[in-house]
Length: 99
Image (cartoon, rainbow, N blue to C red):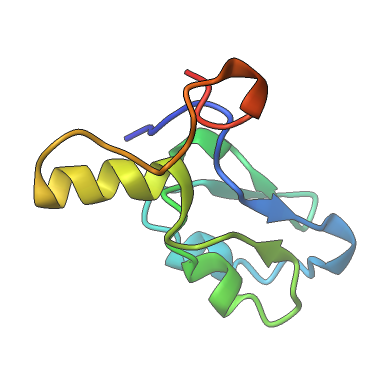
């Protein structure tokens, strides 16, 4: 499942990655792969910002603002019903929630 394009807060610092593969094991949406003994992000738009990868990365190579942003708004709307809202302005210059 993809959420909104280009809004996930997921970041990978390759210099810190040891290629242990724990991110592959804990990610529920298969966002990661290993290439040349390092993790790579296959598709950032699949990230639901749950934070499992960052919490389990012993080397600090991954960061994500878990439970925030547009992905969280979509998940909350699916669970609770109603329209998704993350509090962003619809102003295109705000840099938030551009779809």
